[in-house]
View: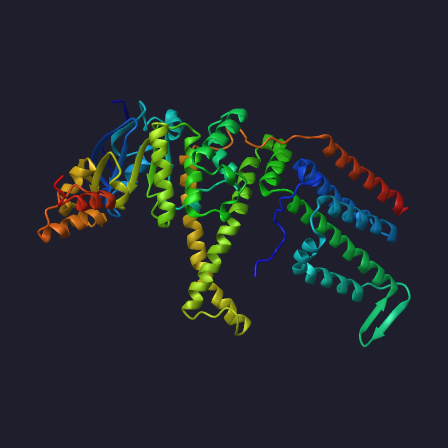
Length: 264
Length: 279
């Protein structure tokens, strides 16, 4: 039921794992932008090669990565077919009933699907090689300038860290409630969509009640341990920018230049 | 003996239309001792604990911790550093995403420099025997282990006193033993003062001093031997007596002349096998 790979950190020892979260975050952000530069076969192949390079250096088993991506395959396929059916231009390749597939449509949908896939692979790679704590630390430092215009950056980062930390706890609780309700004869798996939706209510209510209770306890525990906001706080984790991080950004720059050149 | 907590005549109610949860409670806690507060649910013992670190400010009376008044907002964070608190639910007090992060959370809040933080981190994890788990996520730990991490996080702040607010009530017997052993060794080794709030009398028999609470008042104070000399009072306010104390009563009812001073199973066994010994 809960086999999402997104947001799951795999602690391995690779160059990518050891990089500063800031350089990784900037790179993934850059990547998401420059993906839109790809408009022909060469640029798309370049993106794929870059992704494969990333996967190989991360030491994460490709099989594991792709198994985790299966759950979002539907969205990818949907984009593919929508583009395939509704983009015209070029010679007609196939005509069955109302379906007309044109050459441009086919090429376009391959490109778009590729773009989505490489974006998903790269962002997943980020979360697989960077612990949630590092990601929030990195985000906080990167967004630090926003504190000047009174954006509560620290509070957002802490909220994110706590939410991530409570995901497994709440999943465990959900499973417990499902079992408890099933033991009382509640049926989540059969019946019409409407009756299944209704069966979720007795699941959500206790879950929310307990989440509020947990939040209250946690707030009390945090105050008891001296939490009073960002003011006068020190940090255990120190982000260190190393040469490999500069190298990563340079690589991203090179990729951008290569994409622009290959576009022409 | 050095007084570290002085509670004088405090009263508290959560709101005006509610009855008072604490009624004129006074007590002192001395450095290095282990005090248990016992009482059934709703006796006010948890509310009392929250008064000690300023989470609750009583409407009447005052609480002094290490010389600071909890009513003084200027010293409230210092008071919270001096009074560490372990809560009931191990999951709901684990803030960090790993053991290390969680232990560091309190130190980060109090602005302890990074080098010092790293040094203390390793030291306290060793003290609670969790050093092998430093990188573990909370969902891969048992309840007892999570509570030990919570204790480490508190000890790292070098407090005067550690309050266990029903900290063992959600644990299995194994976890309960782990926590009591850990806290006892901290009490012996570092001279850390311990206040344990519990309704488990088996736990309370190990204390130096016991306070019995009922309906917002301290109804009895004394050493465990003094408290368990009159088990009727404890039973009357709805507490479950330790096994050895129950056995004492039953043995006496059968006309077996036990002294009634045995509070643990071990003491009782020792008393029984030497009962008819003439040497």
